[in-house]
Image (cartoon, rainbow, N blue to C red):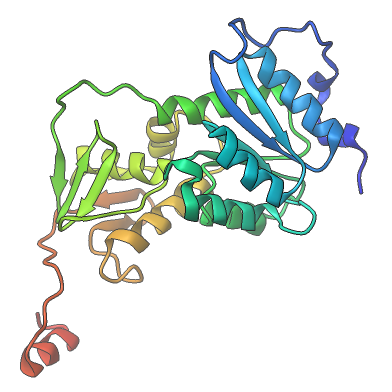
Length: 278
């Protein structure tokens, strides 16, 4: 196992009095930090506390799930490599049970450099990830960015967004497909709302990262994974998407196509559908 000092870039040595930002402790929200390395956990918690967050800590999966239920955090910073129950499984369970909220944001920490591991974290519902070694200051900025998107103010009584059988209520943060509520993560909801505000437009991945994630830089595979996850929840056939279409070399386009809900069809109608004529 690498030493704790190898998990950080230069600014981790800042003294206890170094301010990341002003503010009364706890005013920025509650964060649960889950890492089995006490030094990493202590440094991350210290930076978050000086940024105004109330921080709770856990060192393994079961205690993380218990702490999430007890403290109802606004966000979880979750290490991928935990003993016994790894971070992927913890994230799955947080997503399954919601820890009191179906949209609990998760920022995943990983010591692994493989893109596959980062994508796995996004696939199970992480909203962002930071790869070790990392700057604690950058982590604080990422946490703020995720929470800012989660609590973005929407004018009361704002209009519903609707197309292709999908309806999004930005105020209630509720999305439905033909009246059936969709279970979307924070980023999936924001991504769908953005597409519905820009129906028919080509949206480049860089534009989506800037407008939906609020980042001017980052790994564009984050956008790709979230589009794939969103397709799996709104498309009839995610392998042949008809609503969120890929515009090769450009980005994605949301098409408000007539996408009727599935009905029981006669054998003749089913045959016509299968051979592509309807």
